[in-house]
Length: 86
Length: 199
Image (tube, rainbow over all chains, first blue to last red; front, side):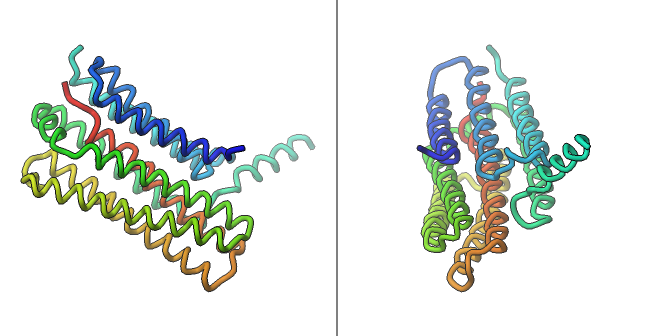
């Protein structure tokens, strides 16, 4: 049975390839931006939870990194959406 | 009584922080610096969307993808090394760290190749704001990769001269946390410069 960290690594590899694939698709720009940035945020969350091992403990660093991921996502999505015309 | 037990349990849960004490504070300051970069890049992008998109399309997205996959895999091998260290299997720690470090150097090679292509195409740091930010952000991140590699190499060398004990695990956890942060930063840099198009 695969360890959680191995499952997380496989998900991140597939997610990276998926986001790369999104970049070449002719889909609505807002959907593309949201998908690509959310995939990045998912990968960052998996790194923090499984690789950095901040999942099991309720110490403030877990919250700090989680907040950083959310803010980074909002900055990039918000900044990008401001430009996009549907 | 139950309150005390609960409080003790909470203290116990909160006390388990991976790595050496103090490793997180400089890292948190560092990731805040990168967040400032995101803001500057998005402001620049909103001011000159056409320039941003034209410049973005000149980057080699395949190298960006390869770098991301290499860095994620290197991080995974650091996790494997840490698991082996906790079990006290020195040979396994060494073999996993060797792969993690080798992949780190692959990152270095690919990043230099990417920059060489950019410069060869006439895209210097002073060409426009996009390339100014691109070289600054990826260059600053590159310095973190080099620092992380030094940290990992020190952990590798130590396995050859000292036992894999609790103290060693703490050092490897610290190196791992730093390496994973480098990885976490790149998963935002990759879409920011390579993937997100301006329509």
